[in-house]
Image 1 (cartoon, helix red, strand yellow):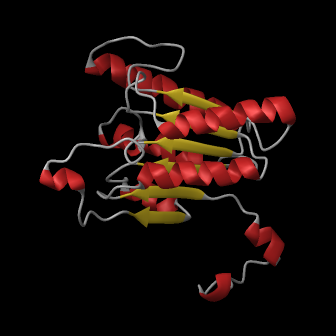
Image 2 (spheres, rainbow, N blue to C red):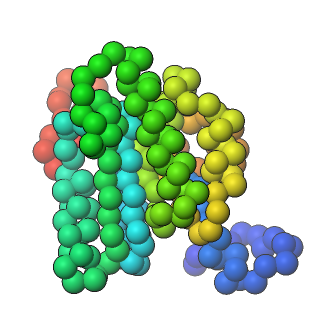
Image 3 (spheres, rainbow, N blue to C red):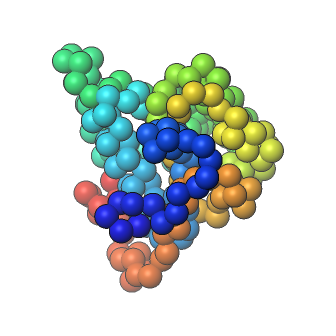
Length: 204
């Protein structure tokens, strides 16, 4: 892709502007570090463009607060105060939605995940956000907590100009197939390999 130019131009009847502005379904997958970090960086870019940002964390504990959440929520407050950037919502799964923090069994968490997916579906149907970051969403499909065909149909047929970024290891082949942009993070070396725990500013 030299100088930002596409390698090929399809004969699809669209103008360059129309083709450029088509919404994307994006997937960050693989065993390497950086999937979520990259996705949250994309959210920062979107905020700067005035986009409405919706972040949905599906596996991490609802009690665990990462640095990107603090930054994006502060940017959401800045938008409310000054109009700069765009609005931001951040919801966590794990032990429930932000408004439903509770302990429970795997069955409970599976039910919470399914409920969370239904909420995302409702928001897509009403075109609530410009960018959706579904962090660690691939595991819900892998574990059978949500229906793969339903996921594929929802993303493929979503209305309007809504961008979706999905993160998590072992992305389902059907999701990879319909995605417009797929990046696989490879594990080469990591401090964990030598017994070093996560660090402030690096892991959270």
